[in-house]
Image (cartoon, rainbow, N blue to C red):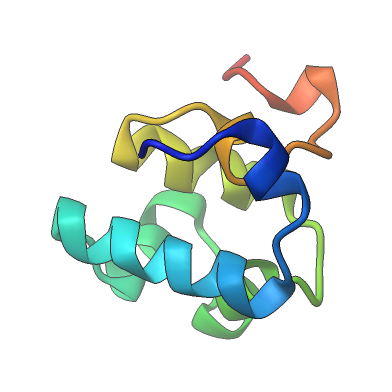
Length: 85
């Protein structure tokens, strides 16, 4: 991921969703893998990815599976949700 932080903070929900989907493809992830790891439903994951819900734990699980920092996709994530406990 080679985007500047300024570009990410000004992204629309649709642009962020497209970036998330591209990361999923790049890393060979499926919704089912993310759901299993986070122990949530696909609907909940979709809500988080589309910006309809915060889902800090889901954000963390997804970025850990992709090997990227949470703040690269969601700069609004509070500090306590940026790293695994």
